[in-house]
Image 1 (cartoon, one colour):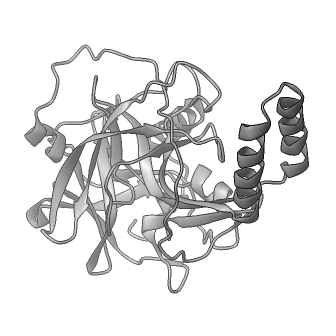
Image 2 (cartoon, one colour):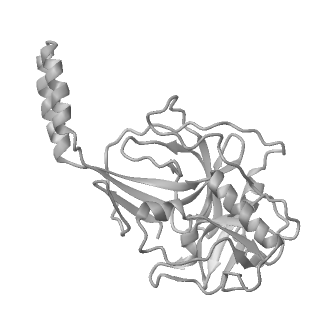
Image 3 (tube, one colour):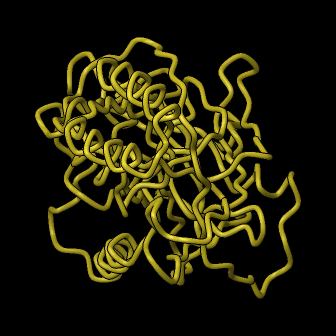
Length: 311
């Protein structure tokens, strides 16, 4: 789970082998915001995150978020971490471990949507819906991250200026069995793929990192939830149109460069561009409405509608 493929305009969900590619990526710009509260220290950021422990093993990461209710703590994570990818069934029992501390494990009370297997969904649709809110059975007395949408959707590569958003990624680190913060990474953009609901990034990730928060390192807002890796395969279907452009250069007296450019362009057209790139579900108005609906349900619960197996 967490790895999706896009090939020749078609999308498929399948395991991916590591592929190398040469591609220039441009950074995405984002609207800057300022938190009214004092910035969290590195230790507090770790306390505001944790691991998702299901059926005897760590399955992913999550984050404790700010919300108005006093009697509940709410965690946000990637929906796919609650599924066993081998059986495509929900894990039976899940806990949230703040900062991956075993003694601080909290059982789930409710989740924000009825969870079903996503293996039959198109890969991009999986990514767009790969986010879930979880209410814990007991309240956490720990720092929380602010969930706030950008003032505008994730911009495409054709928009300017191409200023990357500096990111910090918090996730479970399997080798040390701890939560870790990765800094110095950023948001990315590529002309070969764009989706306003997904934030592309270059933060280092590994087993157990899915569901971890991606934080704007300027103001500590949670801007996305890491979901996995996309494989982008781009075939140049515009060779004839490009050829016309090259002929125009020839008429302008650029015959030398035209010959080299034509040869290089034909070679590029024969080989698809392949790229593996990490993505996270961006926080937008749709996600915030999902949170509002979940909070409303917690305040006025409907009888026998708890979707969690742990209720």
